[in-house]
Length: 400
Ligand SMILES: *Cc1c(COP(=O)(O)O)cnc(C)c1O
Image (cartoon, rainbow, N blue to C red; front, side, top):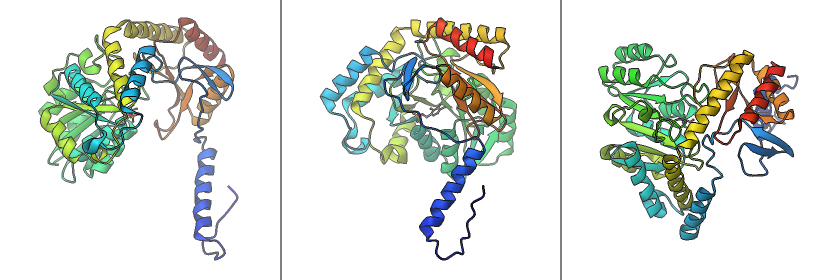
């Protein structure tokens, strides 16, 4: 960039200097092809959406089971709003918690086979709560190298010593745990990795944690409601005993189609969160109508297993089509199907081209993913049709 700033120039007010710094930072972001643009929807989200007047088939939503627009859930949302109004009005400990919150927490505890559950306004906040409440300066927090940003921030904010182990590598975790002499050891992992779509080697991680007296926390944002016969997530799919994963985090904003999150654990852990988790205490409680909608969604998730079956069929359909075309997919069997491009510029160019061909597929670039692994993150949902997937594949086949 050619513009320069001389901070010693005294006709530059500090406000100008500040603004100039930001402009420089933004320009650098653009130069690196890392600049992000906001998309503005003009209609509800679903497999077909409209952005800036363009009709698009949406391949980047996390609404995996197609529940965000379900009439039964919308109706539960309305009922909740009629009963409790729109906003919760206060934090949970003051007067923001409704009996819908209580019902949902009991249902989630029951569903996950744990003693108790606690609702948070977002998964980001739930993860911050876990790390900051249970670990401090004398403790170690162990994170997969590809852990979600909210887990990384949580670990940083905890003040504990941060260890990153190689992605999905129990041997590397074991080594890191053995070499650490911190008091308490907390291992945080995604169940399904958000940008790669692969599943954590959960059984091996459990064994390693047991051998090293570490507490394992699983964030099942992308598996809950989608994996397992009844939608209990990765832990249900693998028949993991409750005591092997003492703390489970999952979110409502993905497959459940609403918004918010929960932590499920034993009563002592949940009570400790209520007393000490700052992201629980100092924030307005999730709106009761959202909670009511989530209750309805959870019921559908259990009852309508065809949603998971259809999704599985569509994932297989996509994968076999992509394989036939020789596309460079990561080995994922979940609804997250990343197509590796490499450099950020090409990823953006292809994503833009797809946009003009009628497909919304987001380019995921560093720092969200490691340098050189920019990708198209294609997500499939129950609401897609095979025909829509075929059209996407055909277009990708011509472009790549
Ligand atoms: C999306 C996501 C979160 C954040 O959840 P929000 O409710 O959107 O704040 C946390 N962890 C993982 C793995 C996620 O993918």
